[in-house]
Image 1 (tube, rainbow, N blue to C red):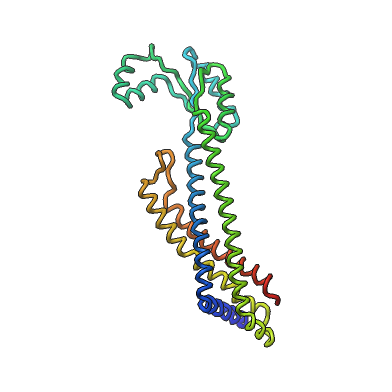
Image 2 (image 1 turned 90 degrees about the vertical axis):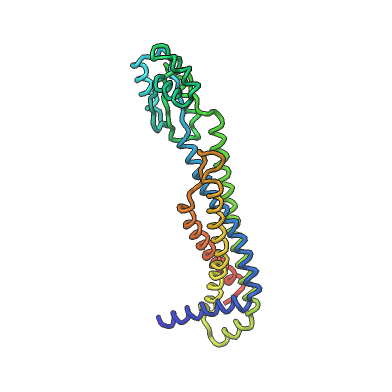
Length: 300
């Protein structure tokens, strides 16, 4: 056990020495890793916000079902039961035309002067159901099913626009995921190449270590930790830029993008996770790159 601890400590010391011994090479590698992880950070932050945008839109989308003017209370209750029975319905709320009239009158003084001339008997507005759906992508299909029911005058939900927004956000999520995976692969090859060059520079030293009976693990360990160190150091600047840059952007835009409906993820809820993701990616990718380089270029 003590021997293993000594080998571990020696491996860590040798890896630090190697990083500083080949400082220019290490610096170049860390710089490339930093650039890669900055792009990864942007992709992660973008992906998280796209997820929130999609959730916000799905929560805000409402199917408005206008009832025929002559619809009775019994017919209305029957229609409500039929709508609730549909598989894609999350919730349904009834709003009377009188409630709508009063709300519209309160919202606008000019409109209020006009609507106040009407009462419950001559109100020209229609009663309505406000329907929330479970799956926004199927909202069009659900709206058509409701539109065919008796006592329904018309159905509105922002036809076309909702589906297009959901599709666009879904494409953006897939692209950002593809970019993150691609950048991780690039980083693995980058670190592996750095370790390969380090192995070439220390070829003579490795041969001497073999001659004196050094074990495979003893020889491999410094390279393994060197990859981890390079990955960790490469993640520090991206973490700083991601945290500072996102907080600056959030405050500059007051937490919203274009409209109140599309709000940004609060920094407190995303930056710690993003920082941990960058460190983990840096360390894991550094270790994978090191293992890959050692197996391919160090025959022990």
